[in-house]
Image: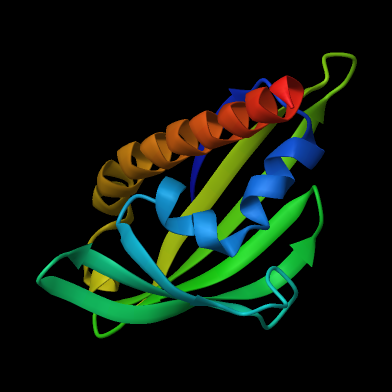
Length: 152
């Protein structure tokens, strides 16, 4: 799996608050253009987010399903973009002791579809920058929420 990490100046609880709000998914996941529906159980195992990928008018409607959920630690997802394929995505939060901050790591790889025809090294060339940008967007959302909460 391709791994990308970013330190975020927030606690795992603060980052988790954004990850666990499925309506924010398109705000930080590069490629997700809109959210159509969020299972009220999100991010419980088996819950889904119905999303669209692409740019209007060329959109693919599909969903992402939670495979593993350990609040404030791990969120493992099956991201679907059929007929293009499916990807396994793991988001891990690691607390940075004594700092009140954490490191967020995204691990991702294609598990089905035409993307498997691409060599892993070439997939990494596409996924690594995408996931760096996703983490940057997640960082902005978390910091904005933390700032808003402190300004009260």
